Amino acid sequence: MKIALACALVVLGASSGASIGFEADGVRVGDLLVTDTALQLKDAGAGHVLVSSSVLEPLTGGLTISLAPERALVLEPGIRVARTKEGFSLTAHNRRRLEVAGQVLMTPVIVEVVEKGLRIAGGRVVEGGSVAVRRVQQDDVDAELKKMQEAAKKMQKSLQEKPESTQEERDRLRRKKLPFPPIFGHPFLRGEGATEHALLPLFEASPIGF
Image (cartoon, rainbow, N blue to C red; front, side, top):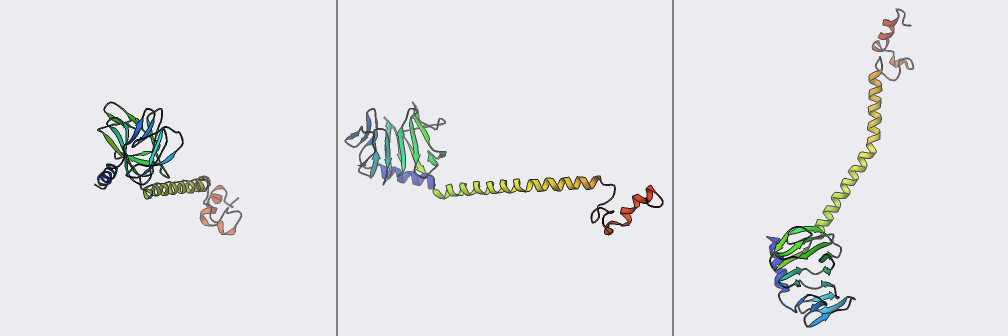
């Protein structure tokens, strides 16, 4: 419900202002066709945009960007679309993920214009005239980063404890092989070990204990 509402607000915000889109010779912003490769700041009516002959990025408001006749992207501020050999590349500042048509994807996200609509990241084709693109909230990214850090700490702790566990296992196996229980060390080295259980094998070997 929240996603649908956010997309609706973006569409409403993008409905007014100059016509913006990619053309064969550059990017059109209203009556102006930008053919320079350097980024420029332009007023698109509904908001300002950074634009060059192959790149477009809304700065202050959501905009509908035409990719081809009856094919468009609805972009939030801070999302950049660039024309590439593969199609159109979507990226965002300080974001590794974008939500494209309700699907969260790692950037860059490649969008291709196909006969039935727009192909997203080489996968499904979204039919229809436009696709909404929004930024994934930073707290979601921070949560994922925290999970990764916790997993790394657990792995490091496991690696540090592994040698100790291995040594403990070796000691257990060594004690298991002894013919008498190792009480306070070797029974011949400390008087505390000279118990009934420790001396029993000696009396079984010889009546005098030797």
